[in-house]
Image 1: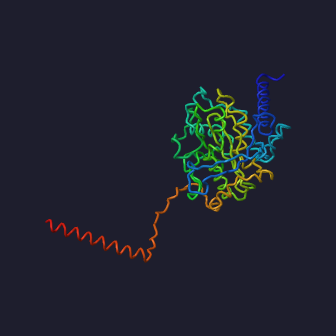
Image 2: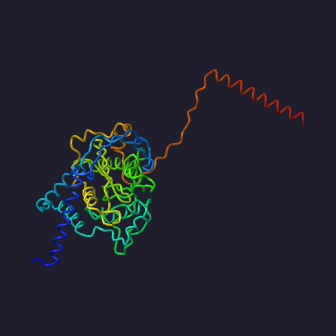
Image 3: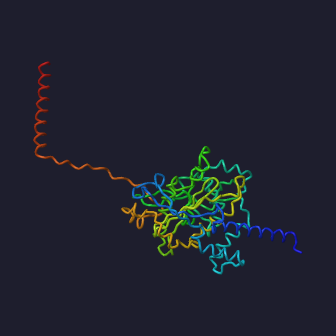
Length: 385
């Protein structure tokens, strides 16, 4: 008979496997309304062809009448998980095994933020919460725990984590997170993980808004900044890594109790937005949900797991190529990472106006009349004196 510690370990592993399987079903099936899908979006209008910072970007979109299961763009990652849940088989490739073990170590460990009171989360700003999630979740699931924090957007805390625990240190550092080009969309990303993934906080929804408005808050229509950042980041990755199999590049948006993923393919001009994903197990918990863990594991390691778009969805264009056609070469060849300056518009120089012979004669008459009047005024003053 198994000893109590061994039995407890066996039960714990069994529960973890069930939770992992349940989370997989949320991203790979549509058996209930809480599954996580991706919606292709068409851009109606945007200012991507103008010089604009991300904070001043606008991007109005309409969804296509099509949906894609979240797992359908991560075939490589889902295949690894399928083999594990079916036969406990782990990857043979050393790199894939390393990434797989990142997930296993996290789900078999403590998924909690270790806060004494979940209400402490409510006192954090959006940026502080995002940094907390990056340090406690994203960096733990990525191949490297390194990340870059916008030095201009965050209070510098040294290596102290937002959670406040003395034993918990940040594995990121502060620096220049600017991307883009001053001729088009440009600006600072809140946090960049491994030079590969952009993370951005979402504005908190006012408490007086309705549940429907809360749900819509995480849509592109109210988050043009994340749309612009995702598009620019995808073009930048294509320029920096032209050898990659595809260029479907994600960006993660984080809010108080949920997150969502936005992806853009800068080769096929396809923009996707995910359903919202609950960040924690429930509103009174500081434990990350299995769905959030699995979605984030696939996303932060998209270089290994993302399989790109199938042929059907490559046809659902976002229309960005057409809208920004005058500056598309800038997006393809002129983007840069760091040291991106805001555009300084040249001083406006007015051309000397053309003067016709008629106006030349008119000027002559007016000037002569003006001089006579001035001379007359001067003579009048002399008489008075």
